[in-house]
Amino acid sequence: MAAVQRLLRASASSGGAAASAARRRMSTAVAAEQTAPPSFAGAAERARRRAAEERNVQWVFLGCPGVGKGTYASRLSRLLGVPHIATGDLVRDELASSGPLSVQLAEIVNQGKLVSDEIIINLLSKRLKKGEDQGESGFILDGFPRTVNQAEILDGVTDIDMVVNLKLREDVLVEKCLGRRICSQCGKNFNLACIDVKGENGLPPIYMEPLLPPNNCMSKLITRADDTEEVVRNRLKIYNDMSQPVEGFYRQQGKLLEFDLPGGIPESWPKLLHVLNLEDQEEMKLATA
Ligand code: AMP
Picture (cartoon, protein in one colour):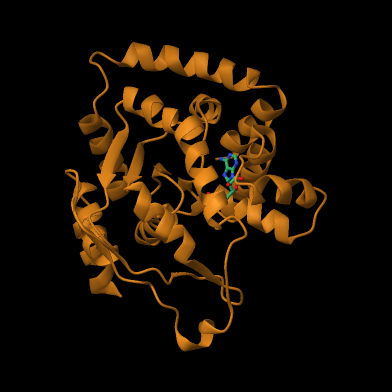
């Protein structure tokens, strides 16, 4: 992890040169190792083995704003004992700290735009360094990489085992973002939207119960400044333009697990555990809790 965060920082400040060099070294090694084209089955098997044996997975969660990356990544991080690192949270922490970057960041984030690779990689490197000092190992990244350039930099400095791509129809994504609330005291995320859309044009119906806060959070709920309809639609457009190519990047490597969310947490969580082959892990955790 130390090497990852040092190289991430170096590659951000050298416009990717350090990562390119590391990538060249790595691709030579990988090319020598590969005898068959990559397949998701192979990557998933390696990832599962790593989860079961070493518990230091290096996973990435992709998906449009509002799809639920944070919800499922944080549940998996608790299950597997690895940190859930959301670059959006790092950006919001920086904004809240009123540090030197905060004015510049507020303007970008509140319009739904992406912050520069250099800033985001510096924030991520600092977070990895802090985790390393605390003895963390492995990670589930949420919200990074968001551009092919970021994916290439990450690829040059470490080996991602698996990339989970969460998918949900766009009308539902907008409703979910508009219903999203955060408790200003405990920081937990809730959702006031009750999604109940009929199946049409070949798309299945989808039902998601609201995720309501307990009474003591109710009066402290706040809405993210970038969760207005106009900004959400802009974020979705930016996702389609800048981040969707990242899916192709990992698909080509045979690391992309596509997961269509069938509904809310009660339907989706068991299915996700099933496709990740982690049902036993959850049973063990529940049994020892
Ligand atoms: P999120 O919570 O993931 O929706 O992120 C909130 C905001 O933080 C985004 O709209 C971007 O402005 C910024 N952000 C988070 N992650 C990244 C990233 N990997 N690259 C660029 N900007 C990011």
